[in-house]
Image 1 (cartoon, rainbow, N blue to C red):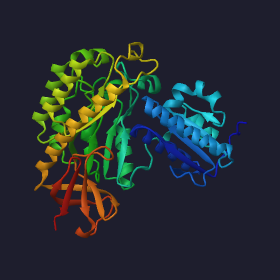
Image 2: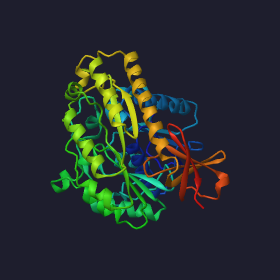
Image 3: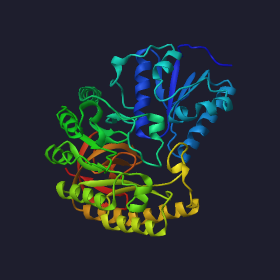
Image 4: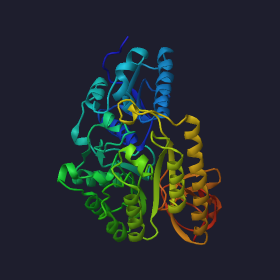
Amino acid sequence: MKTKSHKPNKVAIVTLGCSKNTVDSEVIQSQLENGKVHTVHEDTKGADTVIINTCGFIDNAKQESIDTILDFAQEKKAGNLDNLIVTGCLSERYKADLSPEIPEVDKWYGTFELPQLLNNLGVDYRKELIGERKSSVAKHYAYMKISEGCDRPCSFCAIPLMRGKHVSKSMDQLVGEAKALVKDGIKEIMLIAQDSTYYGIDLYGERKLAELMDRLSDVVGLDWIRLHYAYPSKFPFDVLPIMNSKPNICKYLDIPIQHISDNVLKSMRRGITKRRTEEVLDRIQSEVENIALRTTLLVGHPGEYDQDFEELKDFVSRYKFNRLGVFTYSHEDGTHAGTLEDHVSEQIKSTRADEIMAIQHDISWAHNQKLIGTNQKVIIDRIEGDSYIGRTQFDSPEVDNEVIISLNEGYLRVGDFANTHITGAESFDLIAKLIK
C-alpha cells in the first residue's frame, strides 16, 4: 500500500553514481532542511524515509542501483522503514518497468521532478535556494555542477535520454554558489558537467568556460579550482591562459578521450579524429607547463577490432597521461551503439581494460618517481590509521593519487594545506614529510 504525503522525522539520502548525482543529493538535502526536515547522507539508522538517488549510466551502475533498491525494499517489508523513494537516472529511464516489480517503493521520480518529490514529503520547493547547499563529501571540498544535460551525439551514451539537452547555469548563479560554499568552509571546488567545454553556448551564444573560471578565481577564499569532463572536440583554448595566470586554478584537466582509432571514434560519433585529438593534447601540454592530464577510455565498443586496440595501446604509451581510467562497453537501450552488433566478448573487453591499466601502472610509477625530491603543496583529506592522507593540485579526490604523511610529522587538521617534501613514490601514492 502506498503511503500518503507526510513530513518525515528523518530522511536519509543514499547517493549512487557520479559526482553530478552527489550535487543533486545535496540540493535535495538543502530543500528538505529548509522545510524543517532533518536530513542526512548515507547514515540510514533511525531514518523513517530513505531517498535513493540512482545511477543508470552503465550495466554495473544500474545493477548496483537495483540491488540497493531491493535491499531497502526488504527493510520496508520488515517494518524498519516508513517511506521508500527512488529518484535519479535509473528512475528517469526505467520507473515504468521497475514500479510493478518493486511495489515496496512508495514513489519513483525522474531527474526533473524535484518539486514533486519535495511535495510528497510535505515540503515546498523553493527556487531561491538553488545554489545553497552543503557539501556531503567533505567539509573542505565540493563538486559544482555548471550545467545539466548534454547535446553531444556519442553513440554509447544514454545521458541525454536521462538528463535532457545541455542547460548552463548562469555565471552569476555559479559565482554566488561558490561564495556560499566558501563561506561554509569549502576551499576547493571541482567544476563538473556532462560536457564542461559547452558551457555558456545556450545562455550567451558562445562558449564562456574561460570567463566563468576567471570570475570564480576571484572568489576570496577559494584556494583551488579544478576542471573536469572537458570534451576534446572544439576545446576552448582560451581556458589555457586562465590556467596559467590564476594561481588558484589547478594545473589539472580531465579530458575524456574515449578512444584514438579513427574507426572507433567514427563509430562512437565523437566528432573528432585521431589527428585532431593529438593536436588538442599537444597544444594543451605546450601552453600549460607541467599540467596533469586525466583521461577516460572506453574499450570494446562496436567497431573496435584488434588493430584498433593496438592503436589505442600505442597512444597511451606515447602520451603518458598522468591519470587514466578505463570502462568496458555495454549496450544501452535507446542509444545508437545499442543498435549495433556487440561483437567484442566480455572476456576480451575485460582483458583489454586490464592491458591498458597495466601500461598506465608503469606510466604512473614513472611520473611519481620524478616527483621524489620535489616540494608539493598538499591538501589534507582525512586521517587514516597513523597517517594523514592528502592530495596535490594534480589530483582530484577519490579517483587520483594520494599523498601519505606520518602523523608523527606534526599536527594537521583535515582541510589544512601543508607544504611537503616528497620522499618516496609508488604507482598511485606519494610519501611525504612536512617542510618545517
